[in-house]
Image 1 (cartoon, rainbow, N blue to C red):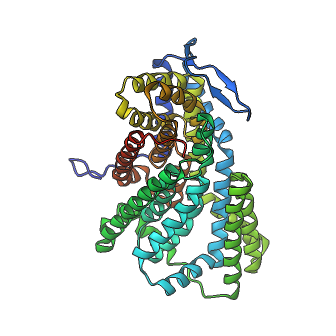
Image 2: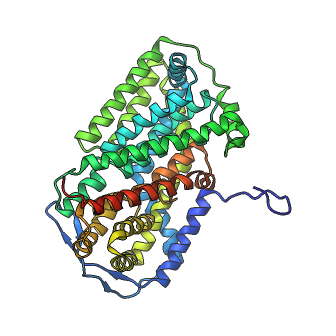
Image 3: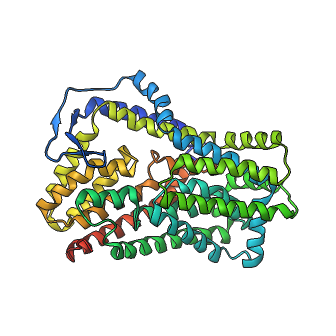
Amino acid sequence: MENAEGKTFKFPNVIIILLCMMLLAMVATWVIPSGEYERVENSNGQMLVVPDSYSKTESSPVGLFTVFKAIPEGLTEAGMIAWTILIIGGTWQVLNTTGSISMGIEKMLHKLGKREFIIIPIMMLIFATIASFIGALELAIVYVPIMISLCIALRLDLLTAVAICLVSVGGAFAASLTNPFTVGLGQQIAGLPLYSGILYRLVVLVTFTVVGILFVLRYVSKIKKNPKNSLVYKENIKFIESYEEEKHTPKKYHGYIGFLLIIAFGIIIYGVLKLGWFMFEIGAIFFVVAFVSGLIAKMSLDDITDNFIKGANSVLLAALVVGLARGILIIIENGMIIDTIIFGLVNIIEGLPDGISAVGYLLAQSIFNFLVPSGSGQVLITMPILSSVSEIVGITQQTTVLATQLGDGITNILYPVSGALMASLAIAKVPYMTWLRFIMPLIVTWTVLGSIFLVIAQFIQWGPF
């Protein structure tokens, strides 16, 4: 980007952006009054907010040293995700060195041809289907390295690779059918049958997914017509130059490693769906894949380790970003302003006309998602309050749950406090401000669509089933 004098303006590194946001969070603790709701433990050991229990507390402004301390604290609290990112990065470097990924993509392209308008929807539908059931947004981080290799082979750009993953997973997370972190927990708090109302959510999910696919394909069409239309044109040229230096010939063990990878993904999906697995277990599977695939390719242990370290180093920024994003939450928690913000948002919602109160829920949850990126963490705080407000203003509990999951999910691929988003961008070396420019039209479209679905849900008095 150039200014009026013709000088190039460079957007700051994502680390600088997050540090600035941490400073803004510090300032907020000096401006916004401290307060808190009472909390009680439910039968599952979860701490739920007690509606109408808000009270102001002694001011707790955060100092500058606390901001710096929040950096290692954030890295510690986000360690589960950060370490898994490093393991995934190391694993993909080992796999790339064996040539299995490039050979697998080459075989797929040989069968399907370079038909990106067929391949991309297929991949997005697969990713969306998985996310619609398990709701793990962090799985996008796992998909990004594969999609980078695929998009480079299709002569597309790095932004497309990230968009395939984040748009499909993000949209399906927002309109999930059985997301245990938002839908399941929210319905439990609201007293609804578990995963009830699935048919209406299926309509929302299909709409979000189709719109997301069309949005990505529209961008792909632009860069296929003229590669210079790419928002990451320069970054992409550099990546392609380094990528094309890697040449591999077909080996018998490529098939074995490909089979190993399919088995690994199957185990991960089963573990997340049936056994409650999350990042620790996913990281363990990838660690095993790294060393077993290296041994299958007859690499020495030293070579496997060297490549693993090289790959982990390539995604170090992504791991750091996750910790810094968590640091923002730590600052506002120390300042005790989260409940005050919720109290203010609820008061605004209660003053809205009955017909658009549900839309107010969505917008309020979208704002709150910036403060508490965790879906389950948000639901535990906001759902008890919104559920009580719904009884007063006449919003059905099912509509309330949908509003909270949409408000949380849509902005997960917008806010820089989202660890999955920032890690995915860092892996693909896509600047955050470039992503923001790309994704904003889709965020607005999804928000409008979500609002329409909420108005319809309230109009038909969408109930438990």
